[in-house]
Length: 184
Image (cartoon, rainbow, N blue to C red):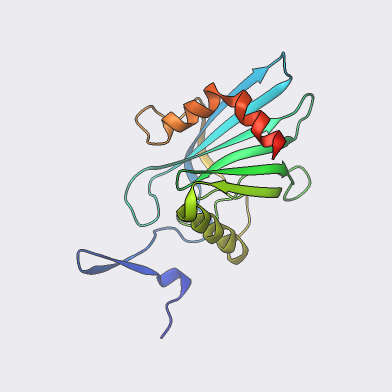
């Protein structure tokens, strides 16, 4: 007998538990937005960090940042950086889902962001690649809507969040990341 998608389970302390509380596409609890504008180089960087009350089967708060890079005078992002289990995911030459919709999709219970792009490169090993591949496969099996958020506020994730150092590192060195994205 096979296990259906909604009945996937994992074993914890000898007891079988559901792998996720999520069903289909869920709403993020909070979204933090931060924008950096460089008038000299005419580049805009926008960071959106989505927050959920759980991460897959784990009962810990989950933060997923996505960086969008905009070229001079453009209202459309051209490149993006997201994360897949702490591996960098480079989205080169973004494509819209539908007209001007460049939003991130979070199709599975692990909240790995998926964006459309001409090229996607994942840096940091097999776990990152596997998690991203699972998110893309989930995207085709589930609803394909942009992430919805209950509450939006300005700022970055709290300093206490595991990913906050990496977010600040990218912001502090965004010009290097911008150049790297353009070279890919």
